[in-house]
Image 1 (cartoon, rainbow, N blue to C red):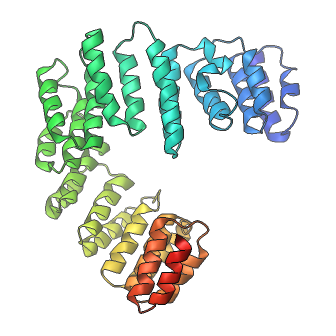
Image 2: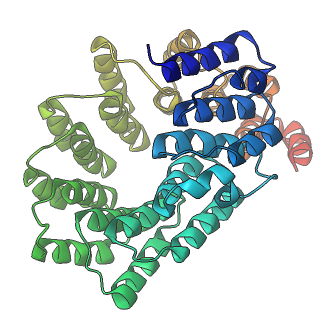
Image 3: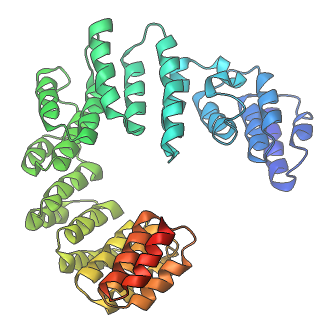
Length: 398
């Protein structure tokens, strides 16, 4: 076995067996490569030793690659962002700016706080502005970063700069980014214009853009246009199929949605949960439960609690408390009872089924209460003749 491999395994083993002394063990590894350096820096950061991780990264004279940087950057910056900004991390001086921008766009979208996301985007834009000879891949990266940070209008603003200042014409990846931005903005007219430009371009056969267009038309309430684009896709995947089903389910064309769902050759959990949620929102709760039973017969794992909260909402719409309790049993089995989606849906269900005591019990058990849980509980109390308690709770909630 090569010495570097032994060294990496030794460091990894040290992480598991000894949470301290990580840097000391690293000192005994004679031959160090990018994986060894990455392992020790990430290990130190993970165990609360940010200053040491930063110090060691400064001495990491390595040819850093995108994989190692994608591990190191979020560990050092996301957890310890008071110490430095991402472009100042010493280990990043060895990476091309386009790689750093890619890391910024892929890692920081996971942060749910809006203020840090804007700060991260400033870092990405600053690095992008410093780049010379920006090509289409560079522009696609920064467009993607803005879309993922929920700043789609900036994508189109930057696109105008790309065309006017650098005289670049969009390729299929740029078209896909722009269509995605239109989808986020529900900008149907702009999306139609982009579709026309795409058809006239030399990339008109590219499936990646067509899939984006299917999603765009579906979410803009134009499923028939989505279907036309869908049929032109050569390699249809589960994402494009699900987008088409969503388009029809969203505007309550139930039969068409079910028809395309039946035709789908390969389904995942989202293929089922998408129409289920749409049917609940459209008041077709009985159909949503039928679909859910089919999902369970297919033995598909439920990877997130949102669809279960939709079914609980469906139970309250049908005023069928026992049906909701059956869903609750499944929630408990799957371990999703702590989800805020589930808790809020249960409060609403119990209130609508006149079981105010159970609704109060759920509300009282919540560790964190959001505006939805407060609103459901207050409204439930008021609707069942307990106006004084509702008013008192309203005062507490403010």
